[in-house]
Image (spheres, one colour):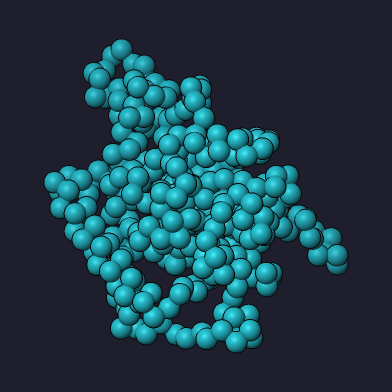
Length: 321
């Protein structure tokens, strides 16, 4: 859709990095408009997880498997895992920075909503989108983001390390944040994300932005539908269609989803009166083969942070600090 489009300005996060002395070395692959969890929904083709190629089994004579790096910012995570870049940026609407970090043994950080300017970021779901960071280690990310001490402690520690150092670790009582509330929040996430994606992506019609399928034999509406059908990927079209269906109900589903979102936020704030932070697995399964279906990725635990607009880092399990 944006193959021949050249932006007239740089995003705020890019300008901030340049002002801080960062050297931009290139652009990375991603799922189209950030919609996907394996970096397979890209006009450039899929990204490949570099870990099996960096550390192939010494006894194996076969080629390393091509595994997914996760998505949607899989290219960003792969570039850091390859050490072809010191750090990379991505957008996190429902785990798109943290999932690739989990799959590539890098550090992914989704900061609190609004703490990094989204100006210049193509929106997917405006109330969920967050500019995030991917780096080799948490200490590297600290150079890019001035984190307050409580967040830094959450990021650089695991539950076992905290216990060994004498810090109290307890289980969050089910009454504080029930599984039913969390499951409902995931349904709210999909309603909000798809509805806002449908609204935000409506401008990519070939008239104001992007490529255009010109057919003088049909009317404008047919040409508009043909343009979006020809130049938007399958996953993007699917999510936009879901958003269209939500918004056709006069926004009632969207409003109810936001009411549920506010209830979950209130429940979490009450839980955090007893705890400094909550430790949650980013991903419950290892990277899968690129030939396997994308729905094997468990995205449930990462999306709660977006629905709540809260900070949530993702740390490699192999590093204690």
